[in-house]
Image 1 (tube, rainbow, N blue to C red):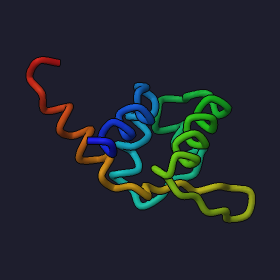
Image 2 (cartoon, rainbow, N blue to C red; image 1 turned 90 degrees about the vertical axis):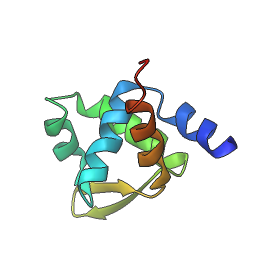
Image 3 (tube, rainbow, N blue to C red; image 1 turned 180 degrees about the horizontal axis):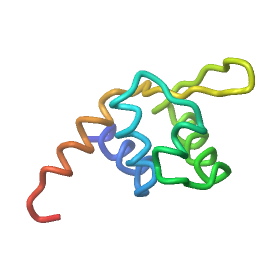
Image 4 (cartoon, rainbow, N blue to C red; image 1 turned 180 degrees about the vertical axis):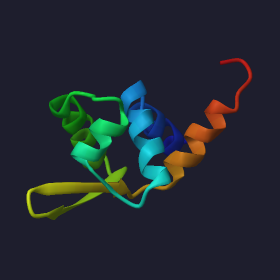
Length: 90
């Protein structure tokens, strides 16, 4: 239960949930790719969300030239989000 509470607290924002869903569908994405796929989200705000989730251990990152690529490190977060999305009372 502690791990589930931690995941819920860390992903408790629609943009963060959308980022997790994007990264679940792709091995890794750059910040620019994520912004584009989020419908033109502001890069500074997206970077803030990514940095927060990375600092909490949900994501990992790697640098390639000027780009930083993010991927899911804690794959359990997908299960928690999918379980909540399947709830009929939401």
